[in-house]
Image (tube, rainbow, N blue to C red; front, side):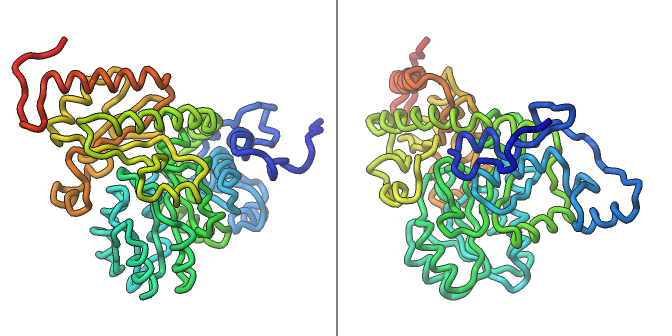
Length: 417
């Protein structure tokens, strides 16, 4: 007998509780306490009329896993709880989610306004793919909110925001830009991957559609790809239809891994953010560092905006090294407690220059036009002990100073052990 109350009881629960229980306050088959992986492509019905009603969405149930799957639905319910959304749709990757949203709401003759600072893959959609379909794209300087408002006022169907941006950690004033978009009837889309639902609630700030690369902090373990989209049921019905026909559905095993990872999101982010702040403060004192990007620093140009719309500042730090790529090539391989890899949001700390991570799809000239320095390094701070991460970074810088003078662009003959 199930004696649990009918209500989920999550209305007033904290984000950590939502991450654990969202979508899972149900009785699973065989009384399992964990969401099962339902690895079935199709679902059978003896009653043809019931089958037809399910197929039309008039009755609950499943038909084909490209359209819906029990395990995937649990994941969608979990992110829906975290983002306080009416509905959610899962995708096979973060880029599948982003591109599907853009192609759902944009057609030939439409216009989208965004910023130059966005993930390199997103930028490629704006610069290369959307123009092929006859969509006009306007990319503004990220810090120029006045210019953004002027371009929005000219008319657009979609305003696309990414805040904090990848990898420069710039902050956009969401309520201000939402107000401008609503005046022209645009759909506002926001990438909330870096902030996570723990630190930022775009829907509460007026955004219409929130996208996540679930590959990153939501899954948290660097072992799965996935994307998630949240919003009203009316908008998500359109996104879901696009996914069903174009086929970028999430598989149930990946959904299970993301569900499992999300349960520790609050715990992971607590440690990761603590260490990120410590690393950012240290980097500000390092002579080989030209600049540090972290919205939690009072020196950040949009620190006040970040404080107003975020409850935490995330676990990503980026910095620019004096000496550019020559310094990068010495510093990163010296690190002991870090991967040099093109991912972020995992329990392990990950370092990487923009040219091999966020903007690997872009040419040198394109990165320069976007203001992405060859010496820019992105750090996804993991859950390791803060002091160990600091000591590791300090010893790596000490090695660089002993072997290389970036001011003279000269490598010394002696090497360190």
